Length: 268
Image (cartoon, rainbow, N blue to C red; front, side, top):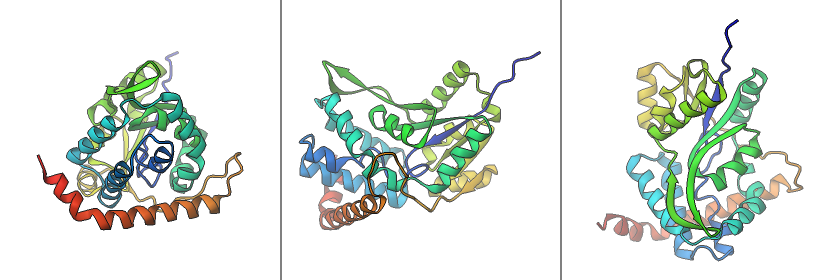
């Protein structure tokens, strides 16, 4: 009797599972922890704002990657892990799409493993994946020396790299990619979506929506972030209200500094 391969469901993270940018969502706590400056917070909020209103093409994604890589050099790994653990429920829980949680549950009921595939660092992605009940993670791995991040990237989970890592995980775990599913919002994830038999464009940016329609892929819009009910006693309403306040502050900061940031972005 032939061995029956199981299927999996691969989910991008930002704007697919959560309605925010995971790499910049923790800037407030990192600032309080003394790891970043006020200027870094403003730059990160600007990057997040650009991302949320229009997605991210290759150039924007690369700019954010370079900025974040330079930012983390010298950070203490244990301190970062502690900050993420302490603030995860307040910052991330209210941003999880209800539609994504329903899909994750459906895939689990159908016997499929759920894999989060994200360009953000493992230190952020793994706790979020646990929060939503995912089985495996493909994420960017950062180099560490003597308990501190060097600022160098050991593996960047981005574009074609996502697809090759999915193929490797499929070979290791026995997944049949032709009967598997993938979900993403970004045109940079076309290789990830093409790697499976059931690609789905979720909240797609303009370029991905065009590609998905031409390729005959399913297009879905996730619109309803809901606070997760967690075992940690964090009132959902307080967490959501705090997120709204932070968002408004960041938006105000972006409006004030828009001209200055545009001038800076134009410099070679």
